[in-house]
Image 1 (cartoon, helix red, strand yellow):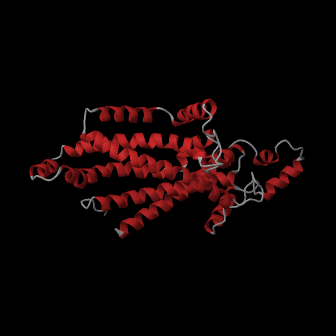
Image 2 (tube, helix red, strand yellow):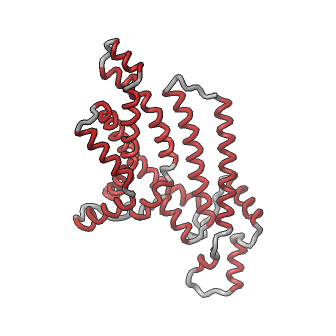
Image 3 (cartoon, helix red, strand yellow):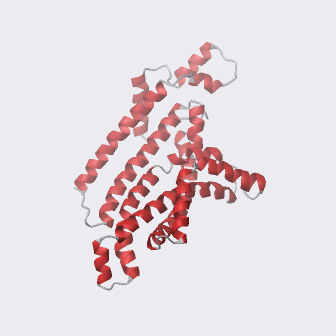
Length: 308
């Protein structure tokens, strides 16, 4: 187990290096001049623009810029924002990530609390009203884009009814719409998979053997069926958690939520290169860590799975 963990961590470090290099080159060859974007409509001379480029290292060779960025990163210094001069990128990302994490934890918790039991019940009561309703609801939830649901929710609950704020994070009511929209897709995908895997497990021989021994239905369901049905669901949950921060970029833009998605969008629009690099590296780190955690969780839930 320890050797496997070390191997996966080494692979993760390699992935982070390659992603950082690829991100740097994509940003390096992006069209536009960050210095001109920074000054906006102000009248400046070419000498002043050159001074700005020299200050931010935009005239340095690519290898020097990349080396300086990696060197500062290893010391925990993410640099200073060009979009917000004088403000630490670390502080910006920390504040934005806390807002995004808060939003996603609530959406994820709600989706799991509803999707897992409903998926199991739908599988055990096949062809019932609950089964048809959950199947239809999960299909719609997966098929309909969440940004469209977000816009329609704003039109209905904010514009027409005036019950909830359409944007921002000023009060607890501001959480309701984005959490609702984010939880729909998570709930639909998890419920659909949980139902399918539970139906498959219910047809296995060891379940029929347990029934023949006279074990109670609830004992068979929760001790043998649900535990084994959770394995493919864990894969999905690990994947969803890995992309939980990056997956809210569109929703945060729709609701003007001050999280990582909104910060990332603003950084790209304003060519704030170091902020973009830092956010991409953070999201990649989350993906790598969650992939490793998912593999380890497999071995915990199913003793038959052994990591070699």
